[in-house]
Amino acid sequence: MIDSQLYKRLAEDQTGVDRWLKANAVFGAIVAVGLVAMALIGSTDSGVTQRAGTTSSTAEASSAAIRIQARAASSLGAHDR
Image (tube, rainbow, N blue to C red; front, top):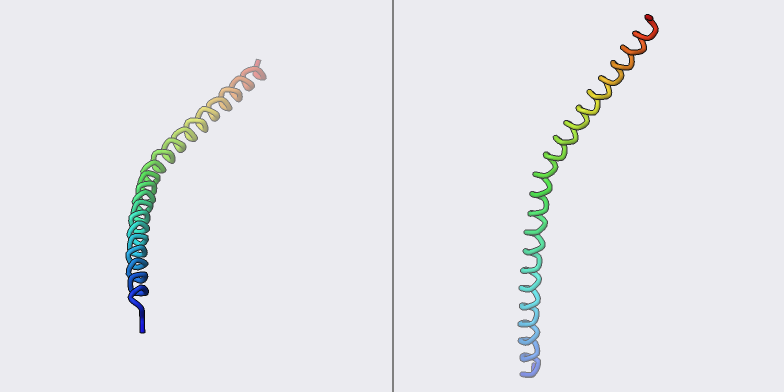
């Protein structure tokens, strides 16, 4: 037969396991909320960064084209003299 001490030990272990499970569930929920928040923040920031990068790249390309055209025009003008 099973002792009453064994029942007591199993009952204590069960409450300990329940506490451990609840603590892990709370911790997991906090981590999950943090990951979702980071994903949402990252997705909204990425669009702004891409637009800014495209705008600056276009501006750099057009300013480089203007410089090349200016050099070409000045070198043609010097040869024509």
